[in-house]
Image 1 (cartoon, rainbow, N blue to C red):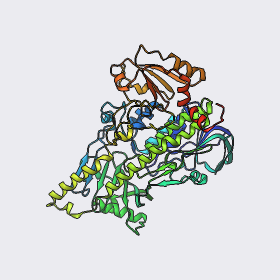
Image 2: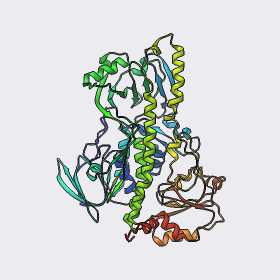
Image 3: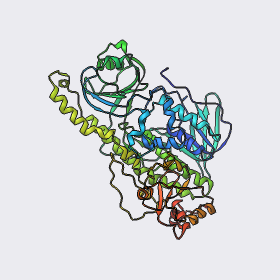
Length: 558
């Protein structure tokens, strides 16, 4: 295959009015278009680059993201990517690529992804490099008739007014354009010019320090055949310097990253020589397609909203890539924001519903930033040590291997982080008095407590109960004798989209702890009970933000 992906679609902008303009055509921006387009909203996505993936990143798609992709109907597209579906996704720590393996974390292949969640999800994490992941998202986005994708268009500026935003765009080929929209979603990356223009501050973890890293997209012909280690998707080298190799195609294409020393500013040729030295091979055996310096961070935006502008993905939270949480957290932003934008635009919720986007997602973003920073610090604790390559150093290697397992396994044992989403303090959920379950990053304990992800259970026809949640409010009837008609009637009276579903699977009531559960469009349990509430309208006011609007005096007529 070629070392780049296909470019993104471009052309002139043929409309001057949209419901939403999305700035940024990376995975989070395109995912925003899929979510909003699926709701029938008109969306324009603009991206200043051509969409060609020249430097691939973010291969790790976690279980929660795969559940979202499942709802969009594209989770199984991973089997059609160029990464071998049957290749295991092991992580290997080695003293050197040509000497000793110190520790290994076994992980199954993409084809066997569902085994990783042990019945707690209908999905599982996968390895899906951007060469194929980004185009798969684009294909899904353009399938929505209300979505326009335009690459090689730059957002020059914007004005936020009382009724929406005016966005000034430019294209080398088509010239300037101005479009109006009710809302703008900034998915324009870690440096987010839009966030800076808004003056939204970033809250930095005081414990984190910046560091410079070198990255390179390379071809290493025959590497797998030359090394003594079993196949892995990532190799972590201790010697001769710390280095990480990530597989991109299961063959000769790799992304190589390593921390830079103080004062080190390598030229292209230096990068090639450094990689060759680390792999004990000739410089001629290393082909570098792209090399770039980067620096990690651990910050979260103070607010994810300013007027009609909202931040998502790296524009809202920037974290170290350790653990692969960055893009996955961004996709979670999309799931949370999409239904709220629809609710406000369709008029069945007040404008202040969008303020709960910050209230719910910023604490989660902080949690993920801390998690990624912890992973990064644990990895940095291992320093180069030539004695690890000494044939007589078996005891030292065994000791270091145990330390690696003890301190590093948390990075790849994180189901509690992936599925343990909790919005328990959100004004949009109705507490039921049950205690908050433990927050264990490694272990996920399913619970239908309001504010948590509705747990998976297998249905009689082989589907998951999650497949009943199609991006609308869902009234899940668990006990056949309970009548939820008055609650459903209240939704219909207000014109709020609602699906009514029934489950007849043994154990569902025990798992959900109720006879009726109201599940939000993003899969979060909003309320549960053993009978219909005496005042359904009060419940609807709570879960759509009207109660919050009354408390703060929001006069928006919805």
